[in-house]
Each structure stands twice: as structure tokens, then as C-alpha cells.
Image (cartoon, rainbow, N blue to C red):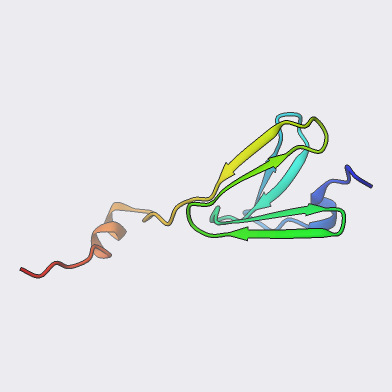
Length: 90
């Protein structure tokens, strides 16, 4: 079935988010970190991962172009950024 929701066939784990078109059609599922995107179409499964990746998918229901971008590898807190700051030698 062409418009079978991905959630039924792929399953979603805790923390994962649905990537939906403006018409409400489920396009894919993103990981809790925002660095992995899973897309399914019939028997084709795609897993796209990485930092600073942009993906555009055409909705199979309304033909709208949908674009999402992975989350860059940024520190979660200021303290973490300071602790991981490269040391410079003078």
C-alpha cells in the first residue's frame, strides 16, 4: 500500500521524532540526536546519517518538496564547550 504509515512498518523508539509533510503525511523518522533519518518507500529503506546533512524529499501524497537538516555536532552546554575547548600553546 503506497500510503501506509511508516510508523506501522518501521516502528518508532522512544525519543524519535516523526518528519511530516505539511499535509500530514509521514516522510521519515529522525533519531533523538537529530543525526539519523530513516525513510521507507515500498521495499526501499534508506538510513541517512551525519553532521550538517540536508535532505529534500517530495511528498508522495501532495507533491510538496520537504527539506530537513541534521543537527550539527554542537556542545549541549557552555560548561561542556569550555571543557572541550582545544588548548593552545604559546
